[in-house]
Image 1: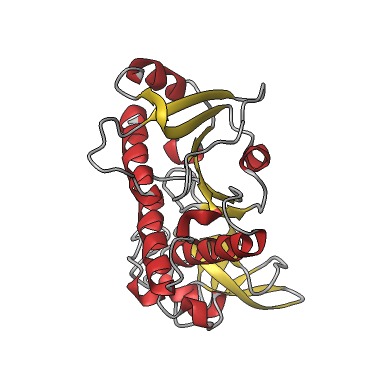
Image 2: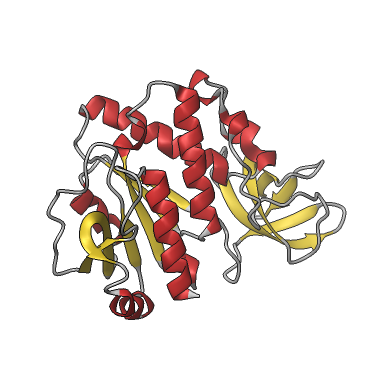
Length: 274
C-alpha cells in the first residue's frame, strides 16, 4: 500500500528562519496536512548542520511535538500533551480528518480507535478512546501512552485489544534522530531514495524512469533540504538506489519553501503510485 512505503525526511532547520512560535506552528501545520493528505508512513527529522546543534535539537523537538500533536485524535490531546508555552498556538493547526480521528463516539464491534492508557490493575489496562467511560484491555500496557485498539466486545463494559487496521491510512509516525541525513536514512534503510533539489534532473525528463523505480520499490524515502541551502551531504550508499530530482522545474520564484516542495513532490509521487 502507498502509506506503507513512503517516508519523508525533513531538516531541523525547517523552522529556524523565524523565532515566532505562531509562525513556526503554522509552517508545521501545512506540513502535517500534506503528510496526511498523501498518506506518508514516516516523517524523519534530521540535523542538517546549518544551525547550532543546541538550537537544531530544540527545533527538531518542536517540529516532532507539533506533528505528533496533529496526528493524535482530538479527544486524546489534553491527556497526551501537557500544557506548555510552546504549544499555545496549536489552536491554529488544521485538523487532519483522517480515519483515526473519528468525530463520533458511537462504537461497534470491529471498530478501530486510538486510545490513551490511563491506569492498570492485575487484570489489564483502562483506556480512554474518546467515549464517556473508560474501556478495558485485558493486557498490561504502559500507562500514559497512545496505542491503537480494536473494539472486540461491547457489553456492560467495552473490551478492546491492541490492534490497528491494515487497509486504511492510520496516520504517520514521527522520528527525530538528531543525526545527519545519511545516518538518519539508516534508521529506515529504504531501497529507493529521492533527493529533491533544483540542481537535479527535471522530473519531466525522467518521469518514466522515476515512475518505474517508484512502483518497483518496497520503501521510498523523499529528502528535503532547509531554508538556507539544498542538500549538500553525500548520501550515496550501496544500501539504496539514489535519484536527484527537480520536482518543480521552471519555478517562478527565486526560492521554493520546504513546505511547498513537500506538497509539490508528494503530489507527483501520489500520481505515480495511483
